[in-house]
Length: 265
Picture 1 (tube, rainbow, N blue to C red):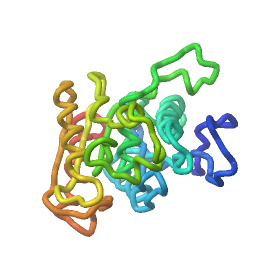
Picture 2 (cartoon, one colour; picture 1 turned 30 degrees about the horizontal axis):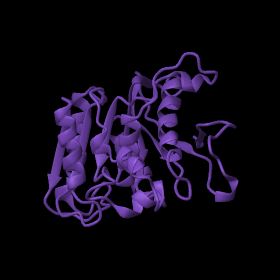
Picture 3 (tube, one colour; picture 1 turned 180 degrees about the vertical axis):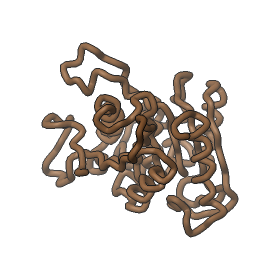
Picture 4 (cartoon, helix red, strand yellow; picture 1 turned 60 degrees about the horizontal axis):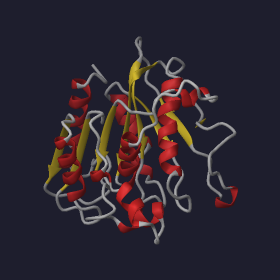
């Protein structure tokens, strides 16, 4: 199945001079007698590139546990906020709107992100668009709230323990303090967040584990259901962590969690 143009002809803020492909979803659909749960995968890359090993291979793993998937090719620098997040929200809306075509349960649409892709996924989950039946665009009529959120060594804060590359690439080097605060997601968690799964390594040298700890604390304060796993050792960017089985167990833990929240049998 070919890549899907999620915006059609009207891509907000599109600049052909940036020489980037239009935002798309690449489908990885399972065969099932019943509509399946689905997870949209957001590779990391500091909002400057997208890590290939955090895309298709992750979607294939999701397929192996009975979950359909899409890999989101979202916009990156020189595009700045809000365009990557708009792409993520649009992806959720698109999948929900076209759920019947892809044999997907429209009430089981999750989003997963690695590193800066985790920031993207979490920002989309927090600042989702509400249902708007008056919208002229039929895709924009549905809510962009995801039904679950999976964060893998995520960038969360742009104020403390932050990854400077992700912040500068998304907001620029001269961002206003209020914008930095707005995109520091530990400050923005709300009571209507979806169930969340988080994992990180304690000695991550690129994105400090405090990012996940702060986000989990905010989830707890807002009585959001979450599960978190902190592994003692492991470099940043492990992806599926095939090279490090003691961390790669996150896949089994996440698979069990997805079953518990009804995304798979």
